[in-house]
Image 1 (cartoon, rainbow, N blue to C red):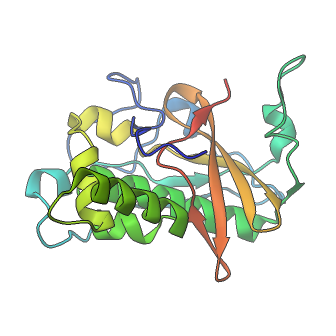
Image 2 (image 1 turned 60 degrees about the vertical axis):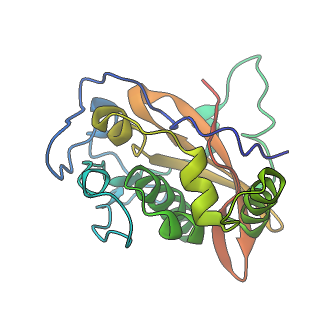
Length: 216
């Protein structure tokens, strides 16, 4: 079951050797700085974060430096833990490289929008079930605005720039798919491996949780 309270920035910590707290840096942390190869032997893609700021967002939030998305690929076998619970790593089947990149782009864009207080943009990347949970939570709280954007804004804590930046570190390695459900497995700050629920809606991958679950 998804938890609307799980809002801690995935991969976040208040220090990282590769972090920078100023400027729109495309620098990545050491574990993400290698060239590497994609799942089919190509170079991993690096996509800089969008720069647009939602009306009503704070200028300081909009200026938080973020890390570029990396899609290193390689499949889920690299994340299996000997003698451990590998149910997510073995869930369904491995997606193709195109689906992996699409899902990773949606997740990264959600994280970037969230740390920059671009709430409508963040909600646009969420699966309908998560949006519904946020709206239901607002209704139970009897808040004035029951929309996804306002609810996400109220639930998301303010993060120091260095921590906010680290929360956007995403190096996607695997997308395990079964029907319209999936798990995106990626490395965050300091090389921690996370898995996050994904949902296929109208042919596009959407983020199915507000935070990933650490696998390592």
